[in-house]
Length: 434
Image (cartoon, rainbow, N blue to C red; front, top):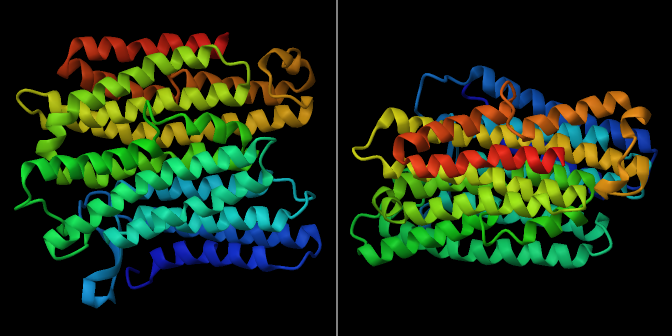
């Protein structure tokens, strides 16, 4: 089974389905809808097959595809997945199906709209499966284009401003990452991620490389204070754009930290751990207060996303405060961060879908105008309340598990850090119930 180029199929099937949809002439809406459904469902089943065939007991890369690409520079077409990649690939395929199914097929240029999401799905799977750093960067940069077009063409009144701000923030961070990747590739004489090394690099340059990666990934997560592009992007994006942005795009930052910063710069990570933890706590607490003051439902969920993603960076870097280092407790922090990424992706996607439905029902996104919805749409209201409670991290929901694991790891590192991070559960309940 491993001889089947499964990862290439997962990348290029939705991508070329999306290209075909974008280039199709306007035909019957049902025909376009069926084509989009087939493309997204086939990709989903391929991802499920990948998950079923994946050996969770092995720490090695699986489903490896490795071909020479630019041999003179040692750049390869190198794909593979591990336990970090698999859940994020599944999250990408599930999210795309939801977007295709819930999009208004009678809307103008529907085929181009869903076509961009299918292209983005393939690109995101490429990010999560790329094992060559230049290939990773290529997919990383390409992921900007479809979402930029979705926001810029189908977004709200201030869509151009939001799209440009989104592009500038993420592109500038990516330039720093490219510099770091080239430096590491030259130093290591390879661009294969697993073979990159900082051996022989002076300490100061190691710190600079770490910061270049950190800035690029912090923008994507986003961490405070480079988060200001996110509320604008969410408020102006159409429902599908908000769903894919919250569910998957934000996870690229956390994935990058796990793939590059932690394994490559363990010593430097320890130096900067306290800085990252402080920024994470500011995101968790301060941004929760900002969310509490929002009048627009989309804006509230966007700010709450910044707060919840603060747990991801907290879980990844609090492990460097353990003295002596405790591998079991460190695993709690990292596993909690990964679980939080997947859980937040599902919860935030559901909430943004709910806001899209509310907007279609009422013509507004203002929280004060949503009174009486339970009488008009009781089933939807129950659905929305359930995911709102999950967003609060209510025990029994997936939102609780990731944050709880991170808080346990924080308690074992520093009581004060754990206490401050635990406040978000109270604050989350405040802005959700208020």
